[in-house]
Image 1: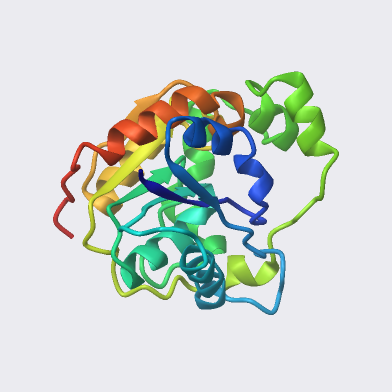
Image 2 (image 1 turned 90 degrees about the vertical axis):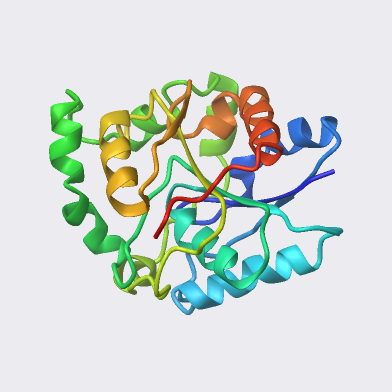
Length: 231
C-alpha cells in the first residue's frame, strides 16, 4: 500500500481530488487529500507546508509517501519533499518555480502568455479552458461548490526553498492542458528541473476528467523507482 499525499492547486480546495480518491483506494492505496487554505492571507508558503505536513502526520502512512502536487500546489509539494522523506514527487500540470520566485513573477519569467499565443489559444477563460474535458455533471458540481480564490500573498511571496529537493521527481503533464500547453511545459521543465515531461491525455484538471487513468499512472510511477535529474 502506498500513501499518496494529494496537494491541490490554487485556492487549495481538497474537492479537486474527489474523483481520484476512490480510484486510488479501490486499488488498495491510501489517498490523503490536503485541505490547503491557500485563500487565507495570513498564511505564507511555509505555513501552508505546515498544514500539508500535519495532514500527512495525521494519516496512517507507515512508509515514505508519494507526494502529488497539482498546478500551483507544486510550491507546497516541493517544500514538503524537502522536509520529509518521500518515495516520489509527482508534479501534475505544475507551476515550477525557481528559488526566490513569486507566483506573480512566474508568468512573465516563463513566457507563459507568448507560449499560449503560440499554441493558438486566446484569452484565458477559466471555466472553458479548465473544464473543457471534465464531465458536465462533475463540472457543475465543482463550480457550484465553495469558491476559493488564491490569496494575494501566495502570488507575492517568494518561494522559500533554496533549491528543488533531491528526490525522485516526475512532471506528469496533460497533453490537452490549455493553461500550460505541452510545448511550454516541456521547455519550462527541462530548463528548471532538467527533466522531460511524462505525458498523459487530459486537460489541466485531469484528476476530475480522467481519474481512473490518472490513478493507474500514479500507481505505476510509484513502483517505477524514477531517477532524479541533477540539480
